Image 1 (cartoon, one colour):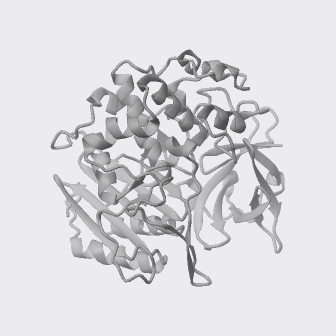
Image 2: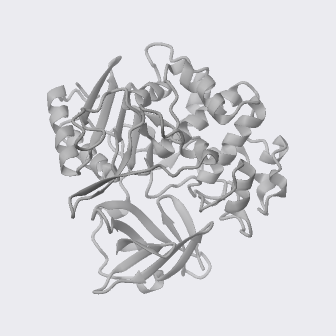
Length: 446
């Protein structure tokens, strides 16, 4: 294997790195796939269920969480190319009942806003509605917009439920039928949906506590109405097949009827989308990773007890990792570092707080308080012995380390891993902290 600068890395070396990372982070099973030079190479490590004695295969499907959004976005963009949807048409014009939802600026919402997470919709809370409209009502009832449509970035799964509704409205198909017919079938990917737990191809997620050396299987909790935001299960080779759509020269026709100019739009950063802590920019359904010598695109996804990652260098490389553990994200970060050092650099977001020194508590007092995104509540408090701690909906969540310029890193209380970065934001008029950006989600101070 040779990178764009001509630095070689053998497959045996890559296999050793992968096996070491699985062991370090106690991930039961992982798949890693690389497409380069017209050839796809796959690796499978571990057991899908610890102790069952069966090595995970290359065809087993891992719940990919939010990477599903990239499939939903691609489905929508094919419909844009066909003239069935408009990127800048008001959502209200599609007769979804959207105008009756309690959002003051809902009439200004467009598909472009939804795909780029600049809609101003909350992420999602614990909605009970069984229809997309009921779900959105639960998410948005008695709430103002987080920001005006197009104003700034705030990651929103609710927005992608709405995209799924638009797809259903113009195709007359369910989201499942549409994503299968428009994207999965042309790519030769058999559909597996995580809300079908009896599907034998689907790998269970796991909760790993490295300190206690305990690993437990967990069930998927996504509801059917949320499927456009996180409902697919895929193998790493499936993800690579999908990622090849976005290569400048995929080598062979990929089958999905998405013309080059629409692929280019998906890979064009939206100026108002600044997803600190998640990526370096955002296009239409794809995240941008601008580290290293080249610009990469892709998406990350976490389901219950899984962590999966897709990266595309349009010049000719696609990589995907699937894992069935909550420690998979930490494994991914280590894998990026380990295979990047010998010469196979992968695009990854490097946030300011990742490389900064702690600020020794500077500014901590002004960050204390309660913050909300939709019906999700974040409480930032002082922890015993100093420093900050965060609770989410009243449950202890993480320890925060504050850095200069109000950036912070998040250490998971269960795994002890650094899992996210974020920052506190200042009101322009008062210069006081009035917002928090965590995991790309904007939460306002109460």
